[in-house]
Length: 403
Image (cartoon, rainbow, N blue to C red):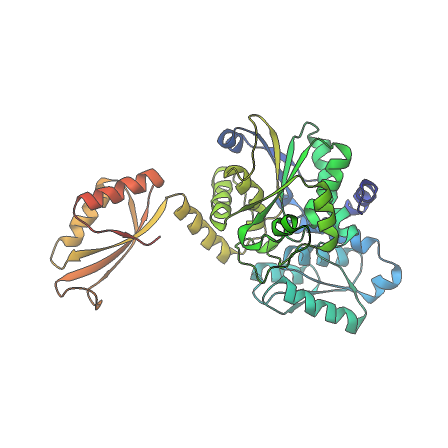
């Protein structure tokens, strides 16, 4: 099993391509949670995520013949970029298989780092099957995204940095996809400071590690469904699961709604952009997915910031909806002059901002003298939204909230 010596040996190799990322104390999130929150900013890492660490360590330890033959891997995006840059820096040819629906930004970035990109399959697992086929056909070395001791050791250098910068840490919180990140971090943390708690977090729609721990063996899901594409794997690795069982204290799950709120709060209050997987640890802390004590020193690992702009737009809107700051409702008006103005007057009196109005008379479900109105509103929060909706109902409007 992976041990501390592997992580220590990886440190100098990893330093060739990656940077020591900062710990950022957050007054905002400390105040919101009652804990002492220090954010590990892997969003500032080269390629925008932690994956460059493990990729560098794996490729650096390949024999010369294997380097000459090139490498291949499968990735939803971040590992792809890490392998591409690490391979290019070491003069190794790389070919990356990405799911067909991988974010365009990640595909382009991977190509810009020097890799050949092949699009195949609907998720990581199908992409991985194609990558292994290329491995056999072209004699390349497969660089696994997580289930490889050298990859895990590279990721573990994050744990060394956290302990160096914050020796008094009580709890480290990190996302789990395939398990490489948490396996490496837990190995470093538990070997050097065993009393520190290691908490893993998964999205509810991709909770293979949580299910595997409950059953005592690796469980593969039929599919995954989450906005956190970076951790959308059907199962954890065999090697990572052994480490998780031995060194991770707790695994919890968060909903996509929780992730969206954490991402938008971090963007608005922390002025930091993360992808869905990067927001998962903070979501677990904000929504109390695990127990914490007052003034407990907690480090959520913000593992990556490579989010597609189209996805970001959707997530921001979802976060605003979940926090009550964006409301869409529908009501029916009498089809007469001034009816819409009367409705708008109620909204204006409660100082909500109208973002869009859709007005129609043609629905077959409407009476001949009626009109259906759908309105998008920006509000100040859940309490303000509820106050406005109650005022509309008190004014005689039958209101159906759509989002």
